[in-house]
Length: 540
Image (tube, rainbow, N blue to C red; front, side):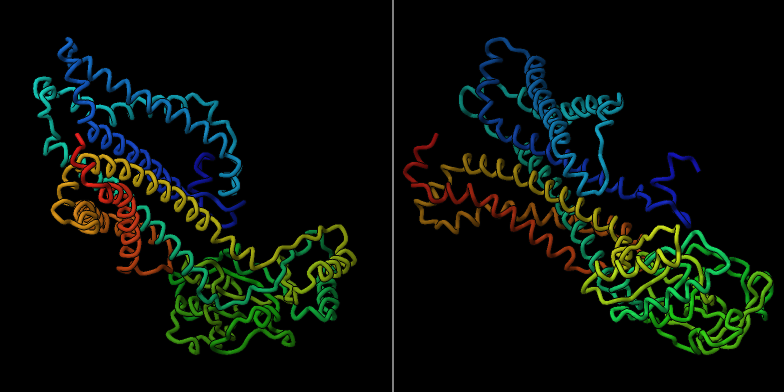
């Protein structure tokens, strides 16, 4: 595999550390693009909405000999300056916020990107693209005014222009609703995974890596270590295994079959070697047969299966597997029990077919269940015994619940970042709506005054003005719902255990967006509605 592809695309057994996700990078890139598009839409909307105020300027310029090409040039330069200032401020904000963002993502973000030519090329492209995309339409609209009509005061916004602005409002709120529903879905999925029963007890457990430096007395030393720790009142169990809950077992074995099966019926399984205290220590449930016993001299020739492995071997019921024999790389083992499926890994994955083999002192990990009321004191005791029995081996440990929850860390970070930028997108959309509603209120000042004189109440006027925006929000919700359902369905496919996309996942965020939008619009409308109608009728 090319080294460049490892971080985002590699997903093999025994990875050096948790890798990134190309899908996550694409997802966040789309969010970034949506934020920029919403900002550009706001610029187009506000520029064209303010066209009435700039109409006289255009009329005078044309009367004084200004050509349309010069006016287009002027408005594009204005757009260019705004986009350039925005990109410069954004780069400054990135430099300022990089330490905080590094803490949020748990990844050190350096400034090497600023030293790359590609970055500055992209920044120039962003300015040029932003200038054209956000400035071209307003420039052509503003430069097309007829000076005679404008100077006579007959100018008004065209129906096409109003329709275009409404379309832009719908577009940006489709993006906003998609983002907020996406954020809500991400948090709901993560909470769903973390609230499910694991079938294994990972609490109040520390895990040590077994000694790397060993000799022929290792097995006896482990037994002594185990017995000494069990003498401490706070310790309830000690066990050893090649793998622990919270990660994929490193031992992946193919070529395993029942003795009654043909060679072409061989299957692949994950293998965990354990001592007889592993199952009771972790609270695993035996559904058929028995667990391992430390008193049986032939126990190393027996195996346990989990329910998934039992089904993969062709047993209809767990009880059917008991006392059957399997061929494991030329050796024969007898099945003595079947364990209920438990979450060896996170709910992102299905239950792996697991085979458990017995060893009195397997290498890999030592798990210690203890009362954590005085962790420092307990760890000091454990370390003393460790150094005495395993000199030359570092005393390293970690808490199993923290280790297990690391599986969800990347998804939690993704949820936080996705939520942060979704909130930013909605804020930018509301800023645009705030400006647009301000202009609407100004343009309808006389109408509001007439309505008040004729007996309209403040609530009537609020309803009248807000109705248009409610309709736009409704259209945005109708268009955003299938789009969001498709996007989030694709994202959820990455989880073996996932939430169902219910109607309320769309309803609650959509309702929130409507409330935010109405509050934004109501600020200016309420101000215009409460103004003395005498002042309103003198307006213009």
